[in-house]
Length: 285
Ligand code: CA
Image (cartoon, rainbow, N blue to C red):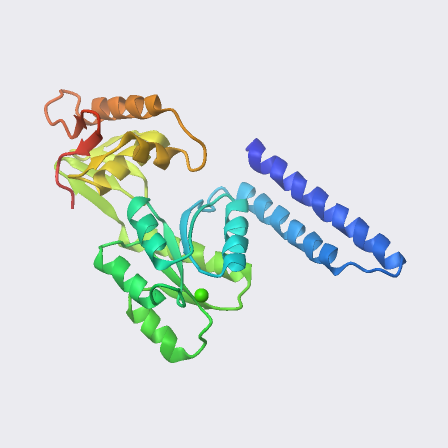
């Protein structure tokens, strides 16, 4: 039982009934309150999405990059997507989106085409040129088919035309992530190590090695940034999205990873760079 999600479900349901009661009372008088009707249906929708995310264990909880300059839509999408258990990195322009995309292991990106500092299509092209392979869904107010074709040719995987239903967006995001996990089989190879990004598992010389979720996240980040020094803070950010974690946790994880990956201490895949952080020293492909 996930207490966090479970209690959020009851809060939403209670809010929904609270708003319905107010709506009902308001209707009896001469001051109907449409805001409460909206809020009631929003709370009810959130409660049931939470419930279904909780019930369907296969529902993917994703790290989503959202690049959208319209503040209300951005806030609304972030709130809704996080309410059902995802983590959203929200960027108000292309520059910030590019930063997040290179800094964090993104599962799927939502990119608005009309951005203040760069055309969304150019940002999609830039992601692909940088070798970033996460699926991308374009948000566009432009409805004509030529725009959509250009969008898909630039390296996007799907598109949704504004205005859209939240349910449609969520269904499309899930489909994209499942498709990319199922068919592309992304993996990172380095010497005897193979990290399967879909199964989130590690093999050492074809032998599967069991990793905890934290160990996996640290290793994936180190391998994605092979040849570069990664600070403890960067690794902490991978583990704790909003609270400040203890840097000692990173040390413990790295030391456990070293034991699991290099029993005889001969390969030394993860080097400590004094005062700076860690370096995954084997070249990855
Ligand atoms: Ca826009």
